[in-house]
Every structure is written in C-alpha cells, then in structure tokens.
Image (tube, rainbow, N blue to C red; front, side, top):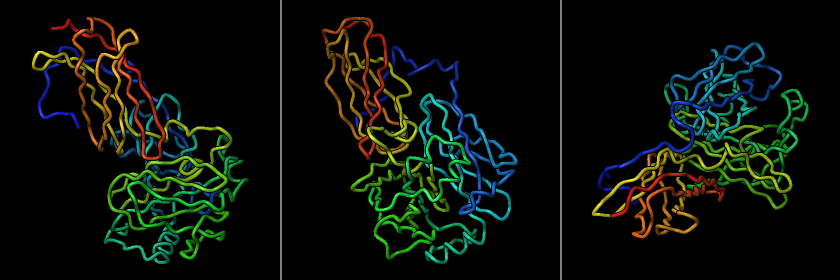
Length: 348
C-alpha cells in the first residue's frame, strides 16, 4: 500500500466528518437472555466494548441494556455475565449515525456450554474457554427484525432453512443446527432453527456470508481471538433481506476515513488520507475539483489497522476547495462511500 515509507509534512490536516470537539455518539441497546431460553433474562450482566475499555452498561431486571459509544467507530460489544453463564461477543459493528437496536446476547448457562463443547469436541483451555475461537450465527427470517422483544420471542423458531454459509478469509465448512437446536454434522444446510457454527477458528477477522437459492442475507464481521465465542445472533448476524432491501449500514464495511490533509514532497502537492480499518477492505480514491479529476484514481487493498494513502495533485489544480471520494468495499461486496471536502494549497 502507498502508505508510506516516509512521513509527509502536512500543511493542513482536518478531521473527516464532524469536528472532534462535537464528539458525536450513538447508542447500542438490546437484551441479555439465556441461550435457548429467551424467556429468561440475565439481570445484572455488564455489557462492554472490546475497542473501548471505558464503556460499559448494566442490564436491568429485564435483561435490557443501553450503551453509548462514539459514532463512526468500530465496536465489538461483549457480555460479562453473572456466575453460572459464559462470556459472549457480538459481531463487530461500525456505527454510522443511527442507534443499533436489538443487539441481543444469547448467553449460554454453564451446563449448556459444557454440553455443546463436548458434543462438538471443542478443545477447551484451562480457563474453561475455547483454545481458539468459535463463530455462531442464525440465518434468521425477516419477521423478527424491527419488532419488540416479545414479538421476536413469539416468532421463534425464526430460522430460514436451506441456507449455507462461508467465511472470507476461508474457513472449513461450518456445522448446522437441526430443528432440535442441536449441532448436526450430517447436515449440509440450515434447518428451521437456522443455527450455524464454526468451532475452531484461528485469530483474525472474518466476513461471514450466507446464501440460498431463494433468500438473500446480510453478511457480518466476526473478530476472533483465542477464547472468544462470537455469536452474531438475531435479529443481526445473517438476517434475511426482503425484496430490494440493502444491509443495515452498521453491519457492513468496518472502517472509515478519519483524517484527510495536504502535504508536499519533491515539489509535488499531495492529498493524504488516514483510515482506521477493522477488516480487509478494497478502497477506491478519486480527487476532484469543480467536477474534474485532479489526481490519478487509486485502488488499494487495505489491511486491518491504520492505513494511509496519498494522491499526487495535478499541476493545473487551483488553490481552493476540492473533494475526495473514498469508496470502501468489504469481502461480501457491500460498499460505503464518503465524500470529504478539503482545501488545496497554492501550487508549485
């Protein structure tokens, strides 16, 4: 990637989006309940975020929580439940101006956790957690999205049968749950339960894609570390897309531009962009002034972490306003486009 071997002197550096002093935020809310027992809430659980050690919320008597997090950020919520239950991570979201609702935690009790681990022959470490990582999701029906929790419960089971799932980067095929909510290695597609699980996943980030001949589904991002169980559960995760629906923006393209700026090198004007990326993304950069391109288009593959790129400004570009268009594309093919204004300095 063009990021650079050398540090560029910046004549100007501006934050992408609202001014930093505004500190825009959004909320994430949902319910913590017992896996396979949605009628049983988990009161008193602490909800945290992997990327934000200082953020937390406590689930109330109904298991409901509400957590405030920064906007335009990668966030992976997880639950620290009371004794008798096991920690679970959700998928990694990217907040984009709207509240994330019904980010529920299906949290296994010790007995069910132990039973599932034994049934699936999951290697367990001394701390009782998986030696690697597990990813779980449900191919879920459209009618449990955008409804209250009691309606969600009433529409259980809410799986979509006949779907298959895979991950990028590639993983061995998953195990599908049968209609009795038991992982069944003999199945090659989802049942009416909709459950899907990978049991031994190396550390890394995985875009999980679910498909069937008759139904479209949203993808999601799982961020794996040893010991984590990532359960991207309904109504998020692999949820059904009806008609011409597009995936909710919080679930796609975990990354964004955080700064754009100007610099010079060897007598050339440069526009620089800094991005914060939580999954491998393809990026396309176009710089325009008064509707005309003033730099060569760039297409790059961005790795997880902080990415930087630069575009050399055409000699004929004038001092003043310009616009940088950045299109980020995830492994499922979903895209987010940002248009960022900046001012160019005087030419050579």
